[in-house]
Length: 164
Ligand SMILES: Nc1ncnc2c1ncn2[C@@H]1O[C@H](COP(=O)(O)OP(=O)(O)O)[C@@H](O)[C@H]1O
Ligand SMILES: [Mg+2]
Image (tube, rainbow, N blue to C red; front, side, top):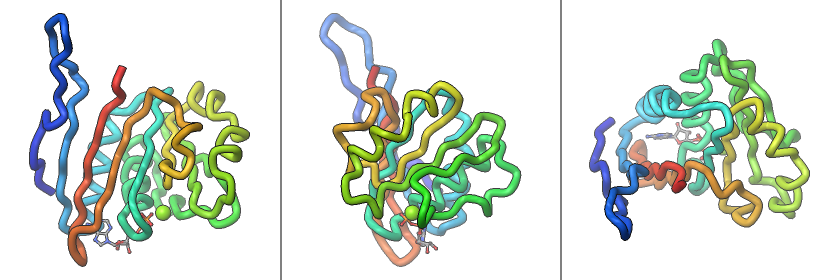
């Protein structure tokens, strides 16, 4: 794993001062590296945080979720898989982890709206795969993580912290 750049999206605001929310760009060369990145990234998450995961099929969203859940204290990360029939899975980590996958939904915004995001955020961290499918229903305050396939085992991750 290599940190390519920090502060790429740094925004200087009128009135002085910098936006502390810096965009981070990371390249991983293996699934294990993406998992490890997730495990370390978890240290930056707290109860009430939402992470929107965007990227095509096979980009590594689920592997990243597995790493994040492990980093948040889930003892058996094998529990993390792409849910086929359930919209949301809750993992018992130090902070509860809610794993949402909008891939198979026909009306993702409506179904996400009916999930009780507020309740989930009140008790834990919410990780949403295919978040772009329900863009209008996502909390305004969220982490945005975009994964791009750049090679057979290479991925590019762009991590944007909440803009608040
Ligand atoms: N650098 C990498 N990071 C993550 N996954 C990778 C990487 N290189 C290859 N892969 C493979 O890509 C696939 C990612 O799967 P998954 O995490 O389920 O993707 P998604 O949830 O985005 O559809 C896995 O088969 C994994 O082995
Ligand atoms: Mg997935």
